[in-house]
Image 1: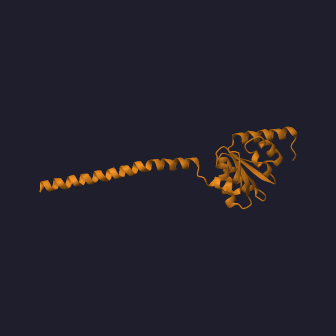
Image 2 (image 1 turned 135 degrees about the horizontal axis):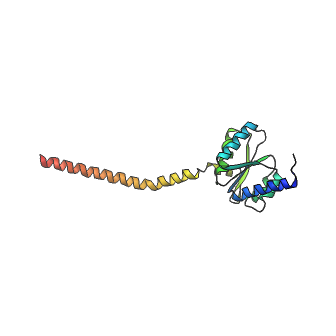
Length: 173
């Protein structure tokens, strides 16, 4: 079904606003995916804060022109689904995880911080742990020296306490 001019402008404006807020764009070819699988993908994306859209490529190219995702405008050909996310790794994670279980979804590329990503770049971006995991790992690293020091001091105190007990027993005998 063809869109009239005002509908096309509305789509371009919507995608432009998505692109302006997003840190990451990932696009994949979806040829042959069933409606049920596409519904699962969209539900997963929605839960992760990723906006997935099937767009006409000419409208997508117009929407990203002049922005940080313009670097991949020449790669926007064929039946593509576009994933925009404000979280740096969310779009890549959603698409890459779904592509692992469904061979019909073929990652074609993406963009992050104004740099074009190839398929391997998208997969590497998807392998980065989430922000919460990274913060937990950082806290663990910061707490490690403190907890080790506490264990050593506790062992020294216990050893000195045992030494005092032995001396008291020797004095009593």
